[in-house]
Length: 320
Image (cartoon, rainbow, N blue to C red; front, side, top):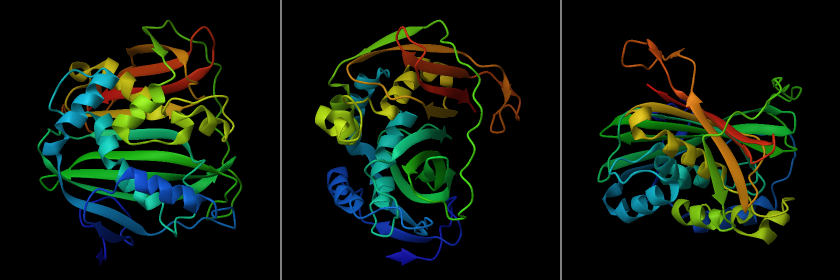
């Protein structure tokens, strides 16, 4: 059924709500997205569907084996608390369902994940019943096309417990305002810092993360699939690298409430070796801090190609 407006979510008030009976299956969504991508070509300014998808009564009590497999792969300690990366995985099918709608103007295949921001507002534990919402918003210019935000929110007991924003790029498309492409923010020269870890990622890394995340995009799981999109071989999921860095910061240092961000630069080719540096960030004022908005010291993480100044990703983990 379709309602008139979200009552407790951050979607624009004009958006309607479509109720889904259950979490959709990613396999079927990717098949639909693959078929639908063929006909989605630049044809003028992008107009996003003004709709949010909502799945109520998502029972996580049956996710124990799934959670355990995820924690093992990413290097998180065994726990009944769902880390931000797992909440992203849980909500990802709802966001994908929005992207494969017939009236969603951008093709699922070929979309480039630029960055991600997520906030965990309280611990979410295995066995909780959750509500998941997702929508697309803010199509805007990028020098290579149009970028768009896919927003997911997770509610537990009627309160917002997690919010994630994934920003994607669709090359060649035009923003709704038809204005000039956005100018890239100038980046200072970057030199690799001293690494605190080295990841040796095997050729099956994409398939392993695909098994726990459901994201079986062929650029991550197949050399031939990757070559079809211009990569010399399969590339690691960006969210795998970000979630692994989050795990290395660790639950004790990030706290029960935290913000987690990542920006992606160059893809990680598989197999490959990634040097990683995790270090303290300068103290910042956190508006959501439980100490009344005082200073909090979070963490900055970066990953780059071992032995080269080829940066793959950079992100932050900040207690709230």
